[in-house]
Amino acid sequence: MNERPLSAWARLKGVARSTLRGLRARVARVLAKLRLPDQEGTLLPVAFFTRLLGLGADRVAEIFRAWKELEPKHSIVGFYAR
Image 1 (cartoon, one colour):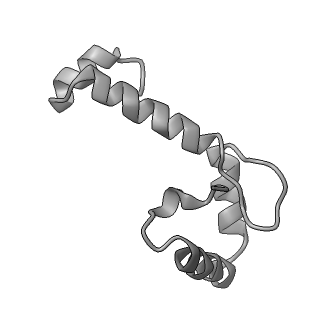
Image 2 (spheres, rainbow, N blue to C red):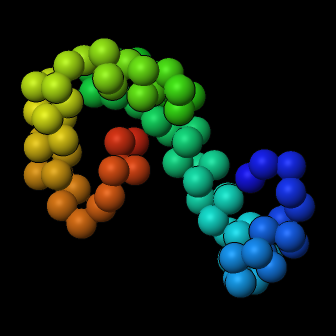
Image 3 (spheres, rainbow, N blue to C red):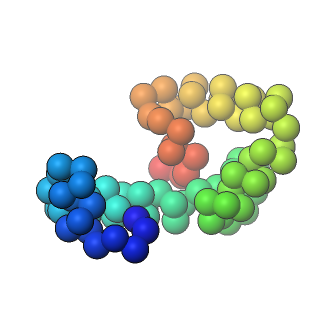
């Protein structure tokens, strides 16, 4: 969240610090689990998106279609093992 303290972000966005702490913790948990199908291990966000884009449009569309069949209620952040 940049160099700005959490309390400053909370005032700026009009939310409680505890809300931002919870969101930060959830994002950190998801980021620690990013992985692509048929590949070992987790990836940092930059590596994840670099590899994802390197797969090509058809393969990315195929991954999203398969993922939506498995996880119809979840958002893009569902690229991790449940």
